Length: 316
Image (tube, rainbow, N blue to C red; front, side, top):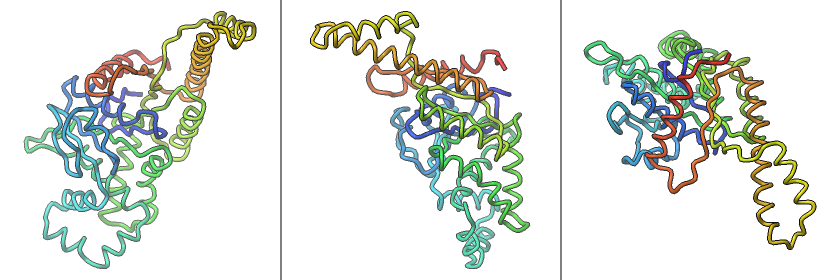
């Protein structure tokens, strides 16, 4: 499977709170550092990315954030209008079709139409050309909603194909479905934490993506990992010491902190091993970053680690 940095279209998905938006931003910076033109598309999300990148607010229309990186925070209604104009190209034709009350009623009654407006717009930009015939963007990254809603977003082309009659909407859904299922051009990048619940959700999400949707998974990012400070033998010694040292001993607080850290490391090792066993995709681990505020400098550090991790030969 290709690295996310070598694809045309990448969905970044994961449970809320795992750092999915930070990973999306870091991936965009990594691709830009390789000379690629990137569009980072958020799905009607709370705008945290502009704070991390130290730019102005990211709105519903595409804006350039820095050289080779553009972003948009897609809002369903604005996305539907813009996507319709992009596909139809002529405002009068758009008005004739989309302002028609029968068409409007059909669209608003179509399951998943709001999600499709955003997804359709994003996949259109993945094939958009400059006047000179070059691709406008080398990589489109979709920072998908959290797990449940993200899975619903990935289901949208299939939903549209199930309900839409032959015509423009169906053709666009067929084109999107073909793109998303092509491992040479697109992939899903999973983001999780080395904790029990996020790991379990990620394994389940991977199963749904592969068995239900047949989408390629291009990688797994285990975010916010900690360095290993204690060996197995040292963890065992800590457990023995905690049983022997009185609670009012000056050493008790230090032992409690050390034991908590050792237990976290043990859980992390177990979760990483489980993820590696159950998700056959290249795994990249990113460190927990505690120093100060999480801004562009930290995001650039993560981008370098992502690029290095995905450049290594796959073990699978």
